[in-house]
Image (cartoon, rainbow, N blue to C red; front, side, top):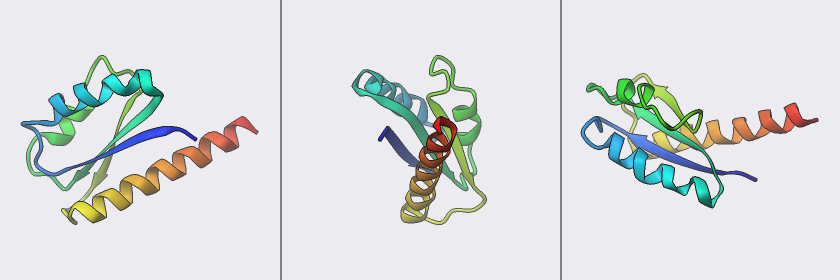
Length: 93
């Protein structure tokens, strides 16, 4: 099992870079991926996540077309994390 952090983000452009920097420090604890779920933001949240550098393939963006709230964003992020794990398992076999 892999350590994946899911970050729901709605209009979080002001804070997302700092959050990603802090979370990326967990790499040394076995962090495999960070999934940022843009929950229909109207600001530059998604663009800033896409432009992150220095994280390699650690950070991935999941986009929701419209705001569905924290719970919906978490559900989508967790579903994406499970699908990634299953895909990785299939690739290994």
